[in-house]
Length: 372
Ligand SMILES: [Zn+2]
Ligand SMILES: [Zn+2]
Image (tube, rainbow, N blue to C red):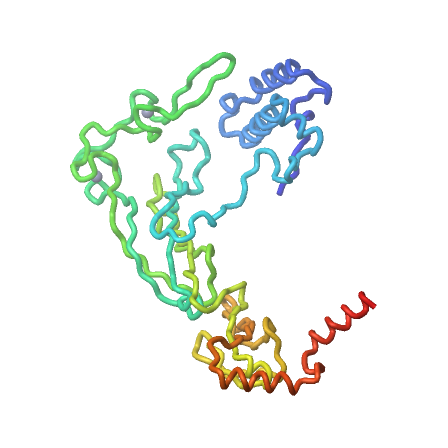
């Protein structure tokens, strides 16, 4: 990330400058560096942006106080004019197109007629836990704008051509002067295209594009997790003025499993075992994603003990490695015993010397220590 200049330095004012002094300094510099005076000058554009950012912070007493105290990073370290990361957590469970993003061509009104990448589309796709574990090929339908085939995207009736917009004379922009600054707006007559259609195309009513249903087939790689995005290049909306198509971004949501809980490549499984198995030890059948494996539980296993079963977890994305299965056993204490069974347990209990229960013995020793 590029380092930013100090906002006071940008405005050329003292740190103790009054609000009026800041406003005056901003006005003076804004007039000088307005992009209209420096067409196609990237540096001037950047300077103007920097100036506006500095003014936005320093002319707001609250933001200025935070800036004075915390500097460029802002109070939460998030910065002042920066953009946060894309958070897909709110889209969980949603399936279908939920977002239409602008393509890379947002260069401002001055480059309206330049080739621009088409809009990206974002599609929410739900897959099963097994599909995430083993990979899958999935097809789904989605709607997207495409160039009208009748007019090839021009919007003009067959045999006619769009004409130069009379309002903006083809620039796609209008200058609006308000106070000390001239601002540039998208031309309202032609919507910024610089062209107007006199006789609209009958297929698309002059818009130049039509909604079409398309089917996408995507390979889901094994090991994918929720909120990961698969990008299908060029499958978004058509490019503008000959620019490339946008992308189709597929945001994956993995449905939960009835038995397994996933944490990265580790799988967690809770499994009940009988108290006899816990006491005597046993070989148990542990369910896995692929079927089951045998696992030996040692004699005297306590409840909530976790065993690691190597390589039975989720695959690592784009790798042959697999995570582990973390098996947590729950000792199931029997209920609804009949009289004979209860009698057997009482006999068992009578035969105990007290040394058999490790943690109970440890606990009683502590109690003794306290009350002696
Ligand atoms: Zn058309
Ligand atoms: Zn126009």
